[in-house]
Image (tube, rainbow, N blue to C red):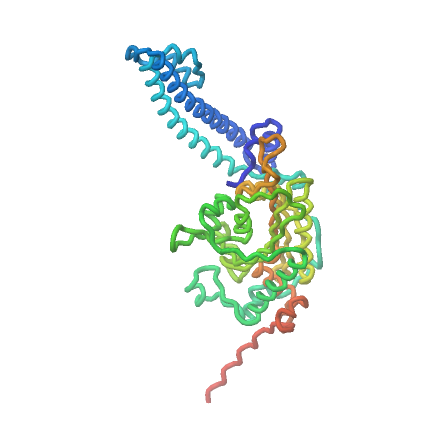
Length: 475
C-alpha cells in the first residue's frame, strides 16, 4: 500500500514532522498518534509471538534433558499461575522451566503453541488496522506549498502566458455543435449512458494530431513512449490508487478470471510496472511518455460540465511519468522541469494559461506538491485545468516496492530507501481540444494551431457546417 515509512512514526522528530504536515493538510494529527499506538501494539505482539515460539522449543529441550536424566513424569499438577503469567509477558527463564516436571513442561509447551497461534492472529489484526490508518495519512507537504484549505484563496499563481482576459462569443460546446463533428445526443447516450460522445471528421483528426504531436514533443525531450494495459488487477490497482478512488473514480470490469479495474490514467499501470524493482543507481531519471485511454466514473462531479467533452468518462491522455533518485533533491528539480515541459507544450499550441501552486488542503494524499496548469477559455470566460503535475517523492514507490540503492536499505539498515516518482499531464486530449476550439474560433470555424497542421494533412481550419437551407414553399 502507498504511504509513509512506518519508521518515521517511531522517531519523535519525524513523527512531529508528520503531525505538522497533517495540520497543513487540514487533517487530524491525532491519527499519527493512533498509528504510533497500534504500531507499538503490533511490535509487542510480534515480540511475544517470537518469544513464545522459543518457549515451545525450550520446553522440548527441558523435557529431553529430564528424560535423559531418568526423571519421572512427575505429578499431574497444573502449570502454576505465576509461570503462565511470566510466559504471557514473554519472561520465562531457564530456572523457572527447571522447576517444572515433565508433565507440566508438556502442558506448558501445548499452551505456548496455542498462544503462538492466538498472537499471530492478533498481530495480523493490528497490522491491518495500522496499515489502514497509515493509508489515510498524506505525504509530507513540501515547505513551498501554500497552507490553506480553500483553493479559491490558497492556490498561488506562479506564471502566466498569453492574454488571459480576452472574451469571445462561443464556448466549446457551441463550437463543436456548429462544426457538426461532435454528437452527445440521445442517439449516443442511449447506447453508452451519460457523458458519452461521438467525434467525427476533423475533430477526430485533431484528436489524433494532438496525440502524434505530443508523443513527438516528449520523445524529443528524452521520454520513452509507453503504451500500457487499460485494466489492472485489484492487487496491482490497490498498490497505486487511494481507497477513495475505488468508489469515486474507478470502473470495475468482469469477465474471464478475477475482476479488474479500468485505469483512470496511465500513471497507474506505469507505477505498477515498477513493482518489486530495485535500481542500484539512477544516474539519469527514467522518463516515460504514457499514452492511453482513461476511464473515470466522475462520481464526485455530479451536475458539473454535463455537456460537451470537457468532463467525460472516457478520454485519451498523454502523461509524463518519471522515476528518479531520492538523493540531492533531484525530484524537486524534475518537478520544475516537468511543469516547464507542459508549459512549453501549451505555448507551442498558442493557448493562454496560468500555472498555480496547489494549496495544502487540496492536495491528494500521494502528492507532496502539485502544480496545475489552467488554460484560459475565452468563450467560457474561465480558467480550466488542463494539467496536473505532482511530486509523490517515495510515497507511491513504497506502494509498489520500487527500491533504490544496492541493498534497498538506509545507511543504518533500519529504513528501506525507495525511488522518487513524479507524474504530470502533457495533454488531456478532449480538454485540450475544447481549449483550442475556444481560443481559435472565427466566424468561419476553428483555425488549426500551426504545429498541428503537419499531422492533419496540412489542414488549417475546421469549418462550421453551413446552416440548413430553408424548405421551398409548396406550390
